[in-house]
Length: 339
Ligand code: F6P
Image 1 (cartoon, rainbow, N blue to C red):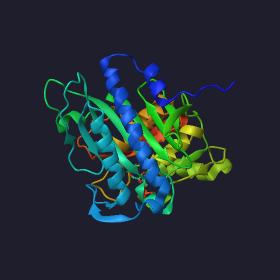
Image 2: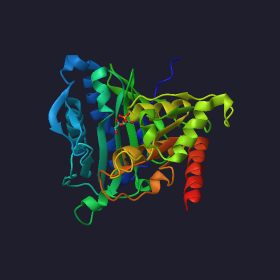
Image 3: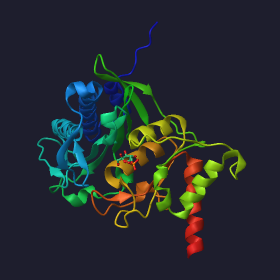
Image 4: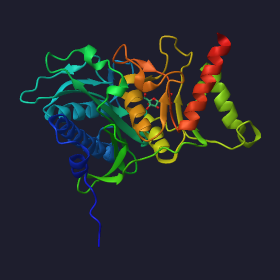
């Protein structure tokens, strides 16, 4: 007898409580899944869809926008508008949040997203992703920019989609991390990876080593030990992987353990890290912590940081618990010595 697979809709109906608050999250998740399906269609057609290449424009980060960055941004905005309960939207691609008015919904939400993460990979046909997170919005007054600047612990929903050989949607409502795979024929997501867990130990790390000369001593110490392998203090060999798409790198770590680092560096003193707190670090931190891993800046728990602006950048160290703890200890040792 063939066992029926659980669809995303069925999962949401059983996983989320039946109160109004949860029904808003239900429709937001379904709308996000629709945006993901439309982005997956574009990425899988590649050059045939005429969506590759760059535009003349730059985003708020000063990065040249890819055609697909803009199309993916539109797909998210249009889908989230349809949810009927989203009062504010903030995206990597837009300097200021977009505020919406909704009627007839008792609960309102704020959504934050990076519609196409790792977009430099798109023209060379390597995996990219989308990252998103959702917060409650005030109902007694119009939402403002300040309402977005909340710690990651207040996220009601966090997740990502990875457009790889298969498209997967990975989400957490704060009760575990769950993975769904897209069936491209029916355009539906099925639960394929319930209650995902990051292994506590690992022998794999992900970091852009071309930045080595800009790292702080604790990161040098950790990476040097990994590279010495069996002949060094760790007494085991490590492997290294770097896709340069945070979603793909973090997804691999979720599946088979490891540690992802984009640490603080001295390249540009005005930027304490490369990755964005609101729409990269915080949602990924929730996904990883809900799967039993840890996520920090090296010095602080990422989910506890209170953002000071919507496009703020932070150092990121996340993945297998034992490795993230070790890197945290190396930072503490270094800070103590310096003091
Ligand atoms: O922030 C965007 C991003 O593309 C991430 O997805 C990725 O981890 C990182 O930047 C890649 O950085 P680099 O170009 O330094 O390898």
